[in-house]
Image (cartoon, rainbow, N blue to C red; front, side, top):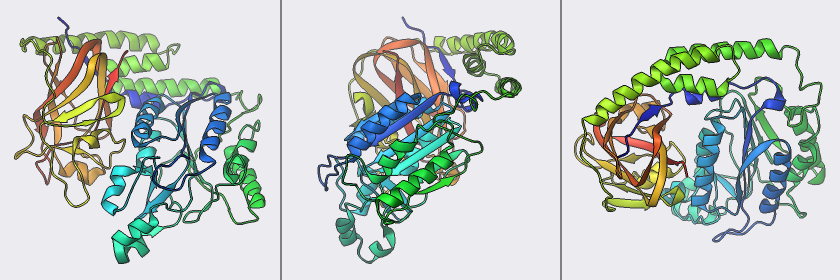
Length: 488
């Protein structure tokens, strides 16, 4: 008999946002994608080379690199998920994309190699929004860097122009548009917004050629590096292409700091201040997960022993409360069959729901919205009422070690949409060979992780909505994203 224990690490993303002052100790992660072999539109010669060459360069600069070349939509979304989770613990997050990209109604989209779009309503189903990428990038990393070598012609322009009619003149612009981001971001385009960049005649595009040439220059700031990149591209394209960048960085960043720059004299006092602030935040949250997250982040801190003592008390209380809740549910669960509406998501997991709201105009609410890598969409239950009693079940196809799951509760597109729709308050979780467990989700926006300790050996996880936070305008209950976390 396996007992379920759960810890909600609401503090994990908060802790991972703090970074060590020295660039030599920075944890760096990157998502690098190069799409060349398009199935339904014109292929591109250089993006796969651009991505492969930059991956090698970044790995030499201390980055853990995710992604790959010639990714279809499923592979691209799966890479985004893995990268987003890594970004939570990193100080520096970087995204590089080479391939087809386009903008529609001011929104930027990346084009997977299997994409095929004829109508505006198919865009969100076939492409990947850049806003979704930015959400993954900004999950925790303090410095966020974006390089977009994707400002080529819209490969679906003719099809969309026919289906959109007169609206196409306003809705369809060349290249990519400006990107909204928070502080700590540096965004570079291969050419200025609303303009078209060249694929290039050599092994790499003009932009990536220049980037590869200058990215490892010791001691050079990223701003100075972009000046050199810009000058090289202008020279190689005879002025036809002018790289553009936008920065909201709050400090100096260098890909390859020199020895002098990497040893600031005020490192120790700054580190102590960071640790003190982090410990204060842990005390404010007061949860088992908050103290444990602090210990993982600052194992040698002056406050580590204090956090350890507080964690022992908080974790014991949480464990006792959970076991008492589990003891009330004595029904033994067995493997269950796939029922309802199902779609296959990342990691070959089938998402099955008891109902979903039918499409409204161009908005879709099917189970696939829970694994598309963006908060712009959501699964919304489709029964009358507030969704109490509705279920969503993740089928793994075989027994797996399930460490927990990650959820973005509600329709988290923006604050208004999130407030208007109902959110899950209580879930009844059922797994194979385990007792059911009641899980309470806090009514806050953003990603939350639920851990099973120890991990469960099960072929499925069923979550039934037992209580909701009512929406201001609609009774429908929504979940934006849901991903299992495996320990095997």
